[in-house]
Image (cartoon, rainbow, N blue to C red; front, side, top):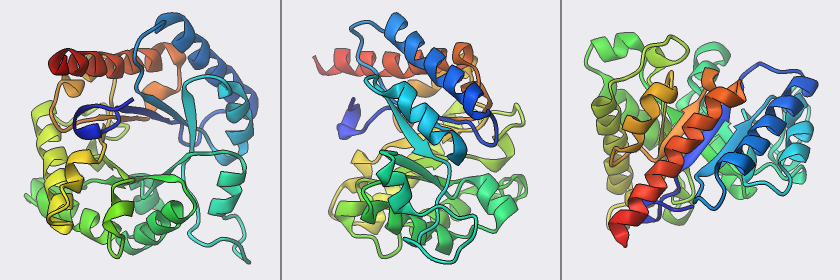
Length: 272
């Protein structure tokens, strides 16, 4: 479902390294059933569930016929080869996975992801018809040094390097201040909105004359929860949420979907 500027409102759950296949089945089933019972006739945000690779099949089976989509948490940029332990884009598309997280801060922090590797993966995702959710965000020390804007701008510019305007328009960006992920600390909503606006302006600057930034969905991630979602969804530049811990229980995740639905409803009122 689209929001202002043709942008989708997206509520995505990143389950990280949690849930066995049986547990993932139960969680996906509870979310699908909760959506069916709680949102009858309502416009829904795009709901994306991102389990581990070993749970993709189970979750895909559970969401069939529902409004929920499935995303992978990572992928390699190469199509095949002697790269033990990696997952290729065609493997994901063959399963009917539609989204893929790229450059999550935990991948950058613990597994050596760089702006350059993120760029290769974004290009590969687009080439295979996957929607890349490109994650950007600053470390605590970078924020304390006043480097937030320059760090985030660089991640956006290098992540989209060499990507045509028509393809860049398909990318979803997630702003995740690293210091707010899994810490219980939330970036103040006006500041999160400011940085998301900065990302939008930087995309416009990269593709000057195209107004692409106005149509790119930008999500906020970082200790998102039921108590913060409504305020976040009222912001001009925040089009949804990339949710970690609160996506691991249906009773925590469904209120966040409700927040996205409220955003859509308020925009319909404004345009009617």
